[in-house]
Amino acid sequence: MGHVIEPAASGRAKCRGCGVAIAKDELRFGERQPNAFGDGEMTLWLHLRCAAYKRPEPLLETLPDYPDLTEAGALRAIAEDGVAHRRLPRVDGASRAPTGRARCRSCRETIDKDAWRIDLVFFEGYRFQPSGYIHAACAADYLDTTDVIDRIRHFSPKLDSTDLDELRGCLS
Image 1: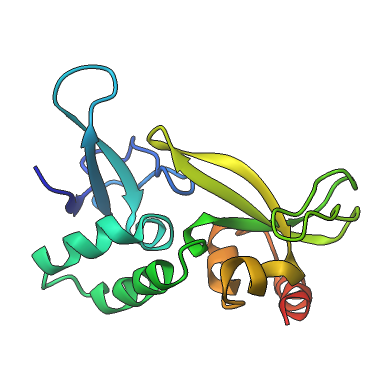
Image 2: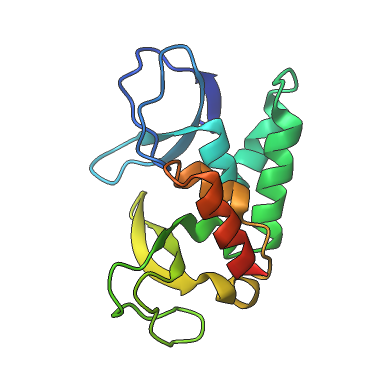
């Protein structure tokens, strides 16, 4: 059975990408995976935009099966960007470093306290596992692009416009 896009039946499922509940009747992406705990399959549910950001290949496989989807063009563009830049789906938001102990996965230098950092995750074991940070200034080298503000805004909704402007300055 292939991946699906369908309205949420009850509003109880949480998105695997952002951890927020998927509202009843909201369209969601279901990625079918072999069941790790028994026979058959299991479905990992994500908001459509979270799927485009974090699981671009399965979403791109599925979009042609849903030609009437109104936001298909925008989702396709996001997902294609994630495929073109293989590390881009690892972005999981941004934050200021609370200490000066974390090391950047790109340059291997420590990330100074209160410096902007980009949070990273890997998809392993049917879930997203935290995998460290990079300096905001290292985004171009590590991600092969600095066009990450929309992803950061999506996965770090508490950042205000001032924070995003500061972060944008660090990226360039």
